[in-house]
Length: 215
Length: 122
Image (cartoon, rainbow over all chains, first blue to last red; front, side, top):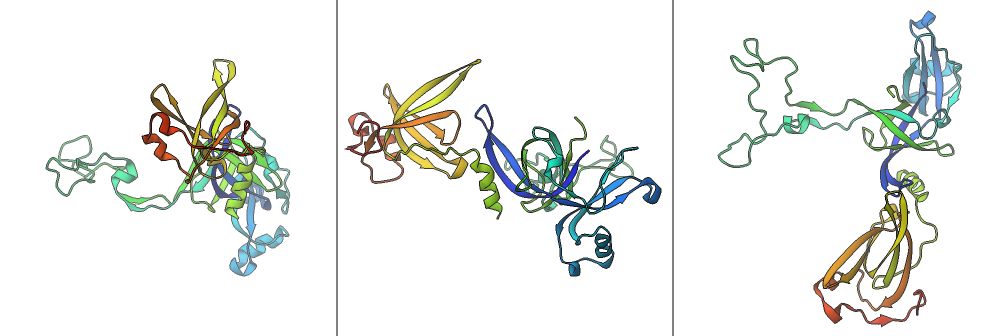
């Protein structure tokens, strides 16, 4: 299990061996500092806490500043934990630096990012509903969800629509895990990971890169 | 900063020794063609009528007439499948995009020859 915190730089394209153009996302990952080691004895679970990107101490709250001081480093902007499995011991110590070298070329990674917020979105955009015809007598209902339940239907009755009925609402701005992205190249000098496909979130958004869980 | 990093990633895929050719040139494009497990080189000959895009997305359009019918192919400049581009003859042009050639047939398709050093046969 390897994990790094990073920042999405943006997307571009590269050629593969067969000469086809592959869409890639460039992620600036690490170097991350180990902020804290959590163990079953002291915290109830095993984890390694990582921090990414320095920030002025005056911009963080005192507990964060203190926690950073313990690891003999400066406060970080983005701090997340890497959970360790049962009996999986880590040889990291607080203050250690982790770089992209924890990953290997050609491996598979999962990338977790916060997707772009879309605001309050209708069902067509949010759930891909079909909507209604543009003409043929349709009035004021072009993007409506249609029936959500009736007195006697499998969509729900009596107590109202079934729970989990897909409706309009807030869209985006949540954590999205992109699984099994091919890791095309690693640049150790610039701390870059080049990952196949798109990654959730805007360019400049923080993301978590970890070795693929299901493979 | 952002574009600098992206350019650096792209630049590994850019061709270093790009043969020089201009709009209006008649070129031989040597392209690699995969047939089953065999590869061979095919030459597409025609007039360069446009060049567009930048960086890894740069492409050029080659037009030729094959038996009364105009054929255009758009090649990615930096594709590994485009092995070589040889300028055979240079043509005199006054614009960067020669889309007006699409409306022409017969003798009027030809551009006046311009003698330039960059072509293979001057």
